[in-house]
Length: 370
Image (cartoon, rainbow, N blue to C red; front, side, top):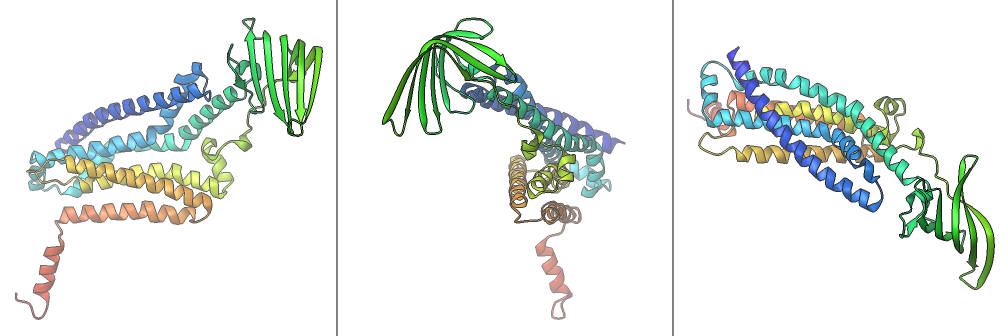
């Protein structure tokens, strides 16, 4: 059918162009942030592209939703501006008739958004979390850069050494400063090597001295050694029980309905429900005066998108803190947005106006004139 095919072709072109622009912007911003994290030592520099890829993958649901929303508003606004809507309306097509082709075009995108929100979002967060933990909890000697002071994974030690071998198993001119249990210890040695004993790693120092102070520095103990061992092994990665809610699967959230899990679940379901509501809202807000520009509609669309997603974040916080129930939030936000969109669409379809209703009511009143 000409009506359906022409509309879907224009939506496809607009959606593709908008998606490319938004993905490029998000990738650029994510790359800058990931490089900043790598500079601070939170991300392995060799895994920057992987972390960026997982992060962008997690951001795809709102990106796809915004692309779909902008493409619908932009396409329908152009039809109003070029007076194509007048032709369709004159042929017996009302504004509500656009919902059919809009949803026929949007349902694959809505399905992808749902899968991304419920499955890919927690998986990408889990992969990113594991890479950050693996890099943050690596062995203390692996954290050290030659000629630079570096903290240990626990933050209680400061290391300095000149690495001597490619496998980082030995080094020279070693300095270790430790602050544990109210004691400050400074250990220096000419050389050292790493040995694995059981499940832990130990740094065996040779030909050095050890200064230990306690009680605010009032007592100082100096000792020299030919060989001294200290543990420098990496800690275990966090288990699934300690993983944040955003890195847990949707099935896990359903099986353990704590307030924090329900808040995260409300966020994921909200991504899919918001995308559905935005199709209806886009059809309702796309009406524009042909003599005016359509930039106002796009600005309003962007504003509505920001407000909606801020309410999603706010609702997640309220549910996690127990201030609002899961089902009540879904009904109020998403049900209210759908009802508002349908009423707005009905107003545009039937050309309702408050002034016309007041005039009609005045004419029907006993004191009015026919």
